[in-house]
Length: 164
Image 1 (cartoon, one colour):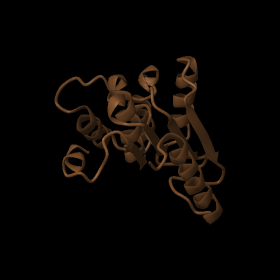
Image 2 (cartoon, rainbow, N blue to C red):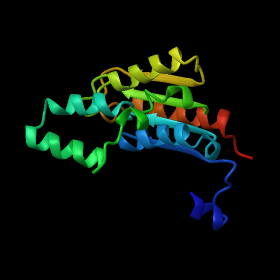
Image 3 (cartoon, rainbow, N blue to C red):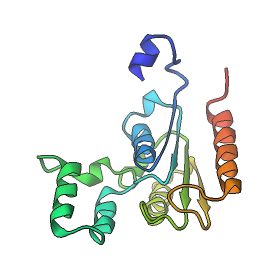
């Protein structure tokens, strides 16, 4: 972002971050970690709780693969995954957030976004929109749902980061 701002491509006062899966996590974490840099964020199927995600993945991985994966995520030190998980940092999310998830997602389970929404409500944070797409997984198979996501995203951006 800094490079784009420096080159005059992006107005630093009008940045909204959007992503899916890990990119959805990155979008949510961006507004939790550095809310001053972004006007809003949108996440589709984003990881919101790293400890819960690792626990979920453990069902599919060998013991060695799980240890390797955990090591890749936490690094050499003792990274507290709660400190970088949007669910545990929900009170820090001060920017508008659009959250969407496929009901049948087997990569990043729906429980990830459900926990985030519950945490945001518990923190008194109502500055979010949440949509669950029935019969969708980690992406869209139904063109009507894909169109709905883009329409919602367009409306969300028009509301929280309008063209100026």
